[in-house]
Image: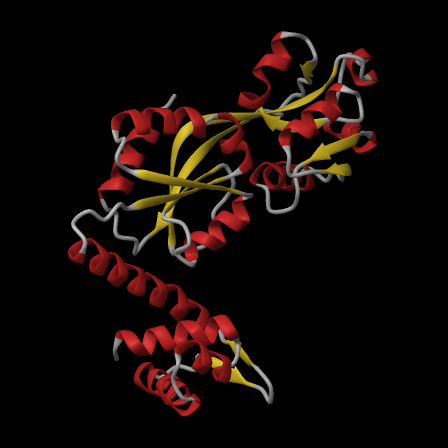
Length: 291
């Protein structure tokens, strides 16, 4: 098999049509069809389900796509760095919203001081999206708080964090002396969107205790959630790192419940087949030193 076979396969997977892939690659449709057939024959797998007007990539095809993109990216890096001695590598870092809101700026400040010649791009989203982009090689490395589900990604805890249950200074729940998990069923909650690691951890924990949560606000912006809680629109579960100032000035209060302690870690995540170049190694080094 050749790199051309992989290029054609990736383009077909992107388009969902061999005819469109052929147009984009400036080759004939039979050439595209032959390349896909040769790949399937060589690896003895079915990459696509053929339908009258479109194609649907198979589960094995999705796995093959991940590996093909990594091979092509490695080749592209080889070509550009060897042919151009002045090539400037860009480190693409994916961070979750919580990480992006409270620690990535500090980490990158140190990183740029130590390695000023390395260009960095940061992409922020929830854990689910960061995981997807790491799998398709759109990102070099991630720093997330949620659970990584793919076995093809390596996840290493490096920074300690904890979740806390909080309310505003005038919320009625502060008047209660003894609060149980069951009491939370009657409360409105302001939480992150589905796909958020913070939300997943909290919801899964409550379900394991047989408690259903009423999510009245769903938001991808932690600042909006914090402001909503301050204004007594409900409770929230959030990283303690995000609300240090609000706790100090009394705008937010931690609600202590027995067995309600959630230490967790922010984790470095990367593809197990990712070539860890100098830029990636340097970023890992700086991130591991952060406290």
